[in-house]
Length: 292
Image (cartoon, rainbow, N blue to C red; front, top):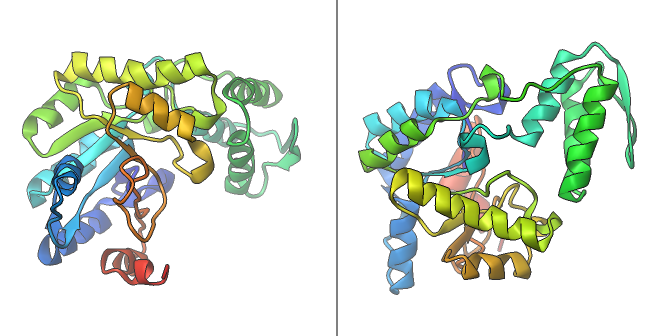
């Protein structure tokens, strides 16, 4: 599970060099495959040995600029899950909004309802983690209100569209990659909310708008949904029911497990890392063995 790739590892990305090294190991010792191929083969009672799937979340521009060319050169397929409201430039992702505000301000501390005082100096990243983790516990409307209040306390105005470091890919770029035959595009909701924290109407929109937008823009719908944030508390049986009703066959989470594809609506993943030791442990099964 990857999010971002760029040359210097900025904004929590995997560096291009490390990404290429990781792909070469996968290609050398395993069978890289698309997520759809793996899941459909498994649904028919067959599993290709030593299969490895590469996935990306969100839909940042740097996937098209850096990750896609490397995947093409190495001949390895990947699945990217996009938040369609982000691609439509209706919004930018809320964790990025918090990061932008904290990076741009000279204010030293803020007061967050339900969290108390948060000191921005000397560790902006710690402040980001505290505020973002708190946002994960809130209903979507309260989270958005918190971010508005944070901007007010920091004497800043959020741009309507993401600044360059946070910008999304375009539909044209997604079509180009989808047409390449090595990239498949799945849904990551429309506005990237915590699915367990939204009401019934919002849930319907977050499930159905991506399905309609992906079908319209790409001419194809992959029935795979990637839960935003993807932790056990971020989705419920009711969310799964909504996905099934919306025509989805699979749901993807953001944590590993002993049997990664046993539950079609709880497909497990290992988070990528710039640490090759951490990567090797996940790739070669050491991390999984430790679960037993």
